[in-house]
Image (tube, rainbow, N blue to C red):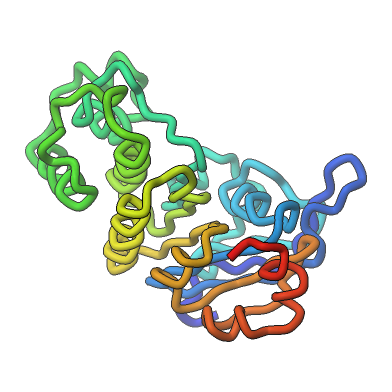
Length: 249
């Protein structure tokens, strides 16, 4: 597993008898931007849930950075190791301004009150400002987060994960509900982020997948159906049958 940062082997997850994941094998390299696609119910979000510790599989193993077995660990311990999660719906603190959202995320272990009233070190302030530059919200750092557009809230939450400096970012359907311009900007943002850390993206929008992906993993019925480039995926007969042929282009 030289260079592998996430290694999932033989994972199965069952919910009330429904096999959400079935003998799933998946790996991604350090510094990689990987996109996972598949029809509804394929197990995409469950894969992220397993990696971050929200869901525990009934069989299999999940290895981080070649030596750390994630399965016995709690979500908080996995996050502290360097795995950050961006959920589909933005969950920013709408009554706080943009800068305060990043400040709170940076000091999330200390609680809301302590995080907001603890004096930032110069290095922490620089980290927040650098993150604001990357996500394109430096000019809105003093604006109340609840006034941001949907796309800007998504970028802010991406920044809230980034500021914790994870080694792997898990991002679930980041462009859902975005305008075309916001979608394109999000793609450029994720590509920029992937120059410094590994990024695993769940997505339905194939135009967006084409914009960002070098390698795509297709899930179907809880296991990997195919992996390849966007062109290889779109030209694969079985993939077209179970996913692309359903009108999700």
